[in-house]
Length: 403
Image (cartoon, rainbow, N blue to C red; front, side):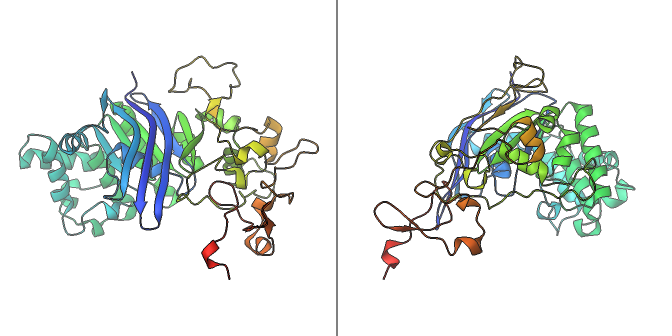
């Protein structure tokens, strides 16, 4: 049985501007000792998914409105908050993106680490302090006994992140969630922190969910990757398989948006056109359709589910986790291998499906300046805005605002 099993997780934020559809039916499994990467653009639902696992959604706006989060045989969505507090830190720990927002600036490192240990272990202050000294030494902080007396602002960014790793691993949790743990660090310190995190978790057999937008980080750290977009998982595969054979247009776009060491000199990067959808509107159709060069007519109205895409080794026979997990995509018209390599459709005569009700090609990919001069009319003669909304369809103007 998987250590963590998330099934059809749905998260909503109820705000004054409307309901935000942050996570829309996410499902995945995680085995003991496995490292899973969760990648995607900012706002795609990566962090919210794992805040829901931890039951740390901002209140009262954030709500888990559907699905299950089964950890070690227990559904975390159904237990009391007092029971969840016992699990946080001791069995599930989290490293947040910015350590300065997690560390209390008016308390010493010693006070914070001792409090964390004693909250979950029946030990005295002296024993907890000795454990804190051991942990700081373990993560490579020199003179740990002396540094315990320091405040967070006395540490550099890399050192603060090391303190956060030490606190997260203090109680030897079964699952560690690392939410972009190296975003604010320079490249050299980033590599040191990642190596430290990988070494410590592998020594203890800790399962890891690594949240990041950096594909280079997940390439060297994970066994499997979930790609998220607009609150959906659109592609999942073993790490080597996903980099070698990306099948979803969004994944292809992400890979072509970063420089490669093996690229020819002067080879341009290919950006993903458009912007992410407004999650205040309920999704209908494929959420990536307005930005997709491979879209079909049905993409505007039908949202594909995750289906087996096969692998280079042939039909999938493995389970749902690890390097043998199936390669699955949510796409009606996946790119071919040659198209994925080129970053664009290569089929003769193929053109991306226009917006419903118009024959204008690629209107969804128009720049704001171009779109400002375009007007599309419905069969009833009502004007529609040219740029599509979150559902991939043009949004009707406010009728009350008409003259």
